[in-house]
Length: 239
Ligand code: C5P
Image (cartoon, rainbow, N blue to C red):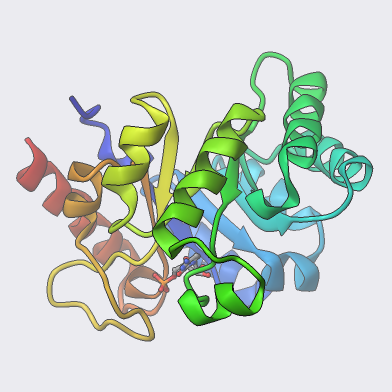
């Protein structure tokens, strides 16, 4: 049974300039609880962007997709945990030693409230042909499942995946895993460059714990109204 506090399950992706991100954060204060900072905003704005959003009361998902030797990722995870991030990503393809180094660093720095650590499996920009070029011969779905299981056995709390993959991943990882799905669109919204989308409610029904949504909120004429309408749809459709 899903917790009814759907506001806590929607993560707004701020893929925009620092100025626009600040403006959106101020507008969404008191409405949204989670903001996602990707590498473009993080590299442009610097680590202080996390402080700014934390000071406004948001939880911060730092989607930096760490991937390096375990020692480097351990060091980066320590710094990011200390910065106050609430959710982080690493590439599951970095292997179990890297995932375990990241997980250990988060728990060492924040033993009581370690950030949620997510593994990124196969990027949705990759297809079967790309996997073959990388020397991966098993089917894409199997590769996603294998990387998800490996990452969680090594200490990740869950994965980022498409809502279409969520049912299978939920079955593999069990009820407590975090399953965070982008590729969602409210009914009637523009697809932008997303191709296979689901509504937020469908994604949660199929096993997602959180959804990531960007342009339908950040590009709306009234971002607060767009966010509130997503939460209202979820409340109506999932109750
Ligand atoms: O604007 P939109 O809702 O399409 O934004 C989705 C967010 O989720 C973006 O930050 C994008 O980078 C991220 N994402 C994605 N597809 C993935 C992984 C991440 O759209 N497979």
